[in-house]
Image (cartoon, rainbow, N blue to C red; front, side, top):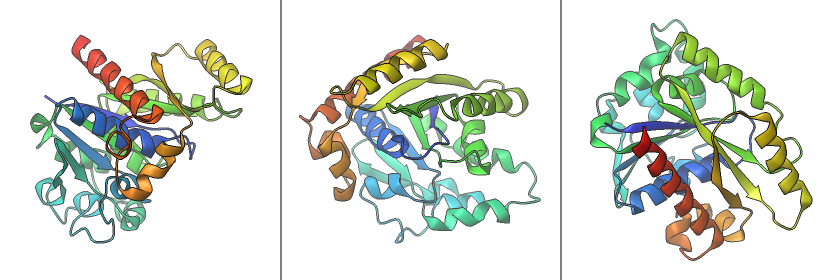
Length: 256
């Protein structure tokens, strides 16, 4: 039975798509069968894994509107052990089109249930907002992984996100838990990064991953080549960090 992890933070630019792409790819490199679902209309995870988001026959949009099955939407073996459910800007209209649809919060869950047994991990990249798309992701997920950028406003919006997760748990998905927090864009040269890590540790009672993702040029370059970091530059600091994060996620999954 696959473990479903939603990567969420309503604050933009914290490394959600980077984490979704590279965690999924590093899990796949460890021999795990992984499905990555791109729930963000920007489609960054789709293009970051080398797919042309505007050339896909079916996307998450078609799935949510019932115009295609999940099997028709999944692009198989984009990399070894890694399948992708792509997205593009069409998805931004889905919220309005789903008004009045019954059980609209469960559409993704009902579809993922059909393929969940094929995968060890399902990684969902959420949009940077607490929208119906994010709620669909959280209703489907077992856990939420929260990337937090090491910057001054890191805690801003975090309490809102935790409140939303608890609300979804209470009303829609009683099994939902916080997987943990992962720090991204860490700059060892600044005191600020260190302060942010200490502040968040003091503020949160959640699991905080030991792995901290550094600010890394190669990590920033990789998406423009449509490659995850462990393939684009396997020796880079970014690749090492995401491999370590994947190992932590596997260990945590084995414990549960």
